[in-house]
Image (cartoon, rainbow, N blue to C red; front, side, top):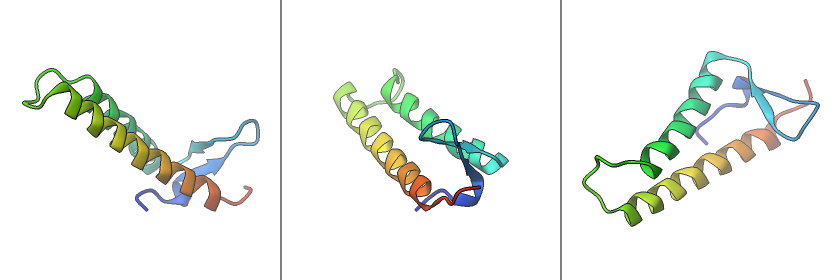
Length: 76
């Protein structure tokens, strides 16, 4: 997938994980930023329905990759 498990640490309090390296923080920022870029654009020359579909596909890929990383993490 896109992200690496070395960039994150498993959280003991809840289900998700923490970025522990700068690459992990950039990965999360790009993932979230891409979603908001396509969901709330006003300047791209595409229709709003298409931009919403692109943002949903972006979000699905990002979430699947995050789930893959979370499953592959060992207890730290």
